[in-house]
Amino acid sequence: FFFSPHATGPAQSGIMSDREVVNLFLHFTVNPKPRVEYIDRPRCCLRGKECSINRFQQVESRWGYSGTSDRIRFTVNRRISIVGFGLYGSIHGPTDYQVNIQIIESDKNQALGQNDSGFSCDGSPNTFRVMFKEPIEIMPNVSYTACATVKGPDSHYGTKGLKKIIHESPTGAKTCFLFFSSPGNNNGTSVEDGQIPEIIFHT
Picture 1 (cartoon, rainbow, N blue to C red):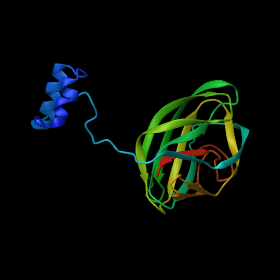
Picture 2: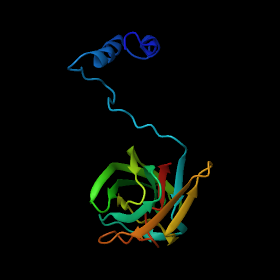
Picture 3: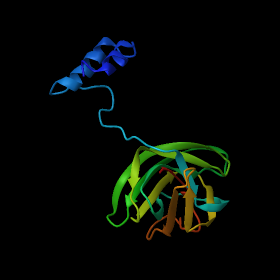
Picture 4: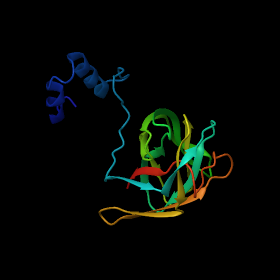
């Protein structure tokens, strides 16, 4: 690393303090490694353009929250990485929501990723982005459950839901989503109606 051509760039740029440069070099050369002030796990590299699908054809009001998760099951026909959801916001004007989002592998009942987050809405029937901290890899023909546990006032909701959506990328790659209602306590969200209208992903 000391003799790498990369060391002459950032290390001499003034971006980092002398102490940070020393810690960084030590991190790559000694054990045990000193603690560093950055994420030292490999970062997931997303290829391709961000895409999204919306499973509803119409927006209505009102949808309430009682602490139960809105859930919808889905499968896809090819490997993708999900980075977040689009959620509906308040029917009462600008509002802040708290939300926990998760993706669960349905058959194993295993959470693959989750985030405690929030979003601000403007009272419109638009969707509002809530993102995962890291992309979640989705494999072909495996059943997953998208979950959102929303805290806040009554919101808009989607109707005339689609069971099947085919997304075609600019390169012609087709991603087919199939949706299924999640059994059990799902706050009323189904294929036809409810929350979690949008899935944001990379192909």
